Amino acid sequence: MDHPPARRPRDRKATLAAVAAELFRARGYHGVGINDIAAAGGVTGPALYRHFADKQAILAYVVLSGIDDMESATAETLTDGSPEQISTLLTTLAGQAVERREVAALWRWEGKHLPREDQREIRRRSAAVLSAWTKALLIHRPELTPDDAELLCWAGLSVFGSVSVHHTTIAKKRFSQLLVDLAHRVLHAMIPAQSVKSTVIEPLTVGTPARREQLLAAATALFGERGFHAVSMEDIGAAAGITGPSVYRHFPSKASLMVAIGHRAADRLAVGADQAMRCADESEALRRLAASYVDTLRNTPELSVSFSGDPVMLPERDKADLRRVQKDYVARWTALLSTIRPELNERESKIIVHAALTIANDLTRTRRVNTRPNLEAELVALMTAVLGLA
Image 1 (tube, rainbow, N blue to C red):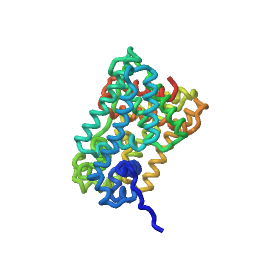
Image 2 (spheres, rainbow, N blue to C red; image 1 turned 180 degrees about the horizontal axis):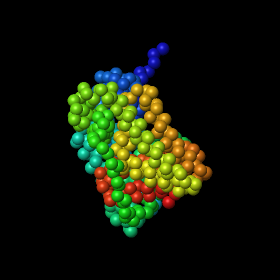
Image 3 (tube, one colour; image 1 turned 135 degrees about the vertical axis):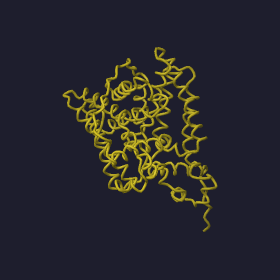
Image 4 (cartoon, rainbow, N blue to C red; image 1 turned 90 degrees about the vertical axis):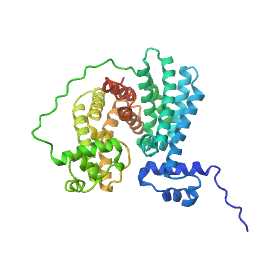
């Protein structure tokens, strides 16, 4: 009996891009090859090249499709900035975030692997979307300055992007509504008055830092600036004033440097959390925990490097250990929030905690807002708003 020929999917290009996006998110851009994508998509390597010129072209397709979705939702929804239109836009964006979690991850962490012209295009188009959101929010909240409104819009975008930093899930309808509620809290948050920042007294030191410390500092700075994969051991040695081969006397590999950076960041977070939670009132303890996180994030470069979300090829035992440390830290937040707000289940609490942490992480790295003089107080205010403490 003759069988009818198998039909190709209507949009093979989009299907292959979706497969690639999941692989990029799971393994990182550098951990995925063209043959990996072809195999997962059920095609040969040459067949994949009929749709995409190279791996960069696939990444660009995925990221720009996410921008397309945001642009379409904004253009179709916002005309007069009414509260109803803003709510409709947030609902659409939340649905997109839940349905395509991998797009947010690639936009946030892998965009640096795109050609510069694609990076410029992404920045230009995303800035135009944020501008439209800012104008709509100013209509709704005329008491805000344009800069303050833009800050809140960036924070709202981070709420939707937070779905990419964890794998916790709940029913899609509830997940989307929870994200909408969190975004509303951000957009209605009060910007705190200018605070007086206390003078930080640097600890006294004798002599120069040990060579190991110099290498850790150099690696942290370079990884933060260029990304893990774009930095060589020779680069790290040069930044520390030694030859590349000499680095191996202190660290056997670049991955071992990353592991040391991760543990240092985790230790500093743990110290801050222990101090914050020496409080009998759970709500106040959670506020202090948010403040300790912002302080550590702003003043500890190791934290932004180790918790950047950029997948790094580490030995499985080290990767599992660092993952456990991060989960334990988030669990402290989740336990506090669940105690304060018993109407939330554990998964909902975890989603909210990740949204709060992502706002701080994102805005600290966003050039448009990270030079604001009162940013630390503003980040704490935004985090506590998301947590439901404001």
